[in-house]
Length: 120
Length: 110
Image (cartoon, rainbow over all chains, first blue to last red; front, side, top):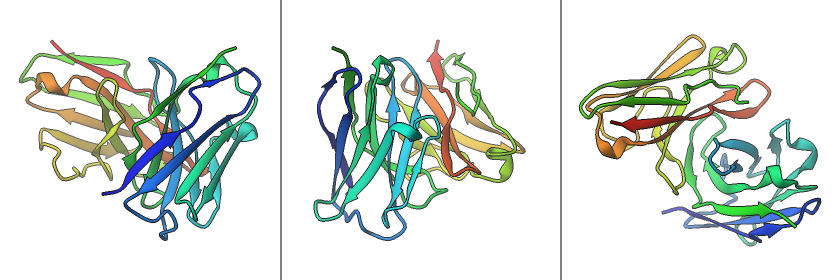
């Protein structure tokens, strides 16, 4: 059974960079055709797609966040990561890592989510 | 503001039928992209409920059904139960290679 687990600081200061890692277990992150992504949910609000990375390294970002987002893969550790720069309080959210088997297929696996608060 | 529009809330009594709409445009749902639906219980990650417009993953009761027409999609829940009280999200794709979510609908079982 595939499992995804987010990890990283729960508190980030304004203007700094938010960094999260998703560790994948029960399967290989480098298996062909899979997309690995990040989705966030501000407290009491809806889901927002941040971006996705294909197993080959191609990236796809939400246009509204593109200038601040970097998603990368470390196949040796079976992990993928999110970096979001210049954060503000508006970036406070539960951050989920997730998997899609193919681009137009649904998100079939989700991490449990991790709350990141942006505050000084 | 979400690109896919859902009603903020719907409600129904136990046993009743409710529907949740998801309205997009010619660049997402209307472009032929499939719509998927997720159920999110409080404090948990979303769970896939309907995929490919109308297909149920294994384990999802047949009380849940989905449909798509033109630039819109709908989720129907029949025989409403207290355990169905949750937030529901539609999701599709955009021709600019973006993943799109609806704003979410809170279902209240009266």
